[in-house]
Amino acid sequence: MFALSHPRIERIAALRASVRAIEAAGAGDKRERLAFGLSEIDRRLEGEGLAAAAMHEVAGASSGLAEDAAASLFIAGIAGRRAGAGGTVLWALARRDLFAPGLALAGLPPERLIYAECGGDEDVLAVMEEGLRHGGLAAVVGEVGRAPMAASRRLQLAAEQGGTMALMLRRWRRSGGDPLGLPSAAMTRWRIACLPSAELPVPGVGRARWRVMLARQRGGEPCEWIMESPDAEGRLALPAPSPHRSPAADRGGERRAA
Image 1 (tube, rainbow, N blue to C red):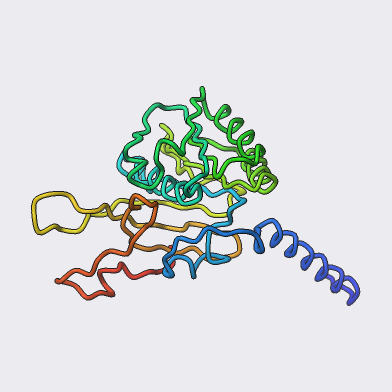
Image 2 (cartoon, rainbow, N blue to C red; image 1 turned 90 degrees about the horizontal axis):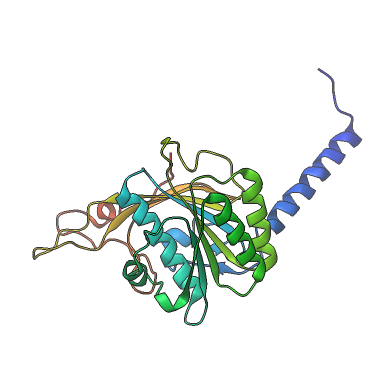
């Protein structure tokens, strides 16, 4: 072992400070944020919202169809709120399995959508990058099974340059590998798991409930919540208190993800 001289220590400290400043600028700390409108979520997010000019990844907690659909609706709610009343969302996909009425019920109506049917992951990534660099879209959504680190860096950079939100739906592959298991340049990474909906006083199915897990965020800590699926304006909700449980227990006990 050897001891560093004082000037060298100061240079290393200065270099680290410069790197942190560059990372903070890249994270868009002073840029526009899209809040969820729920303090339980927003206060745990770095900057109290999703960076608008950045990439965010979402995946189902398992390979099941229900959780894949839940992840799609989670993205639709974010994209719909980002688009507002006049914006347009580009959705690039390789499978024809999107259900337009379902997206509309989550806050993303057909008149706000442009679909781009692609041949595979590489095409989806290319379309996403072009859409992000265009700069005239509210958000760009892409469905992929695999996205190399280099591709995620390009998309993050394109989102920053175009001032457009990138939302990547990471779909489970046949190999069964965790879609969020590989490194990514995304600003945030989310997992969505399905939970039983609230019981109704009459026969039927209540509003869907999810375990929303923020698996990673740049500059912040992971955490999770129990939430109800988006309404027609793309807004998540806290579960209504159950008459058989305490309000704190029914809310799901916001906590850090393991």
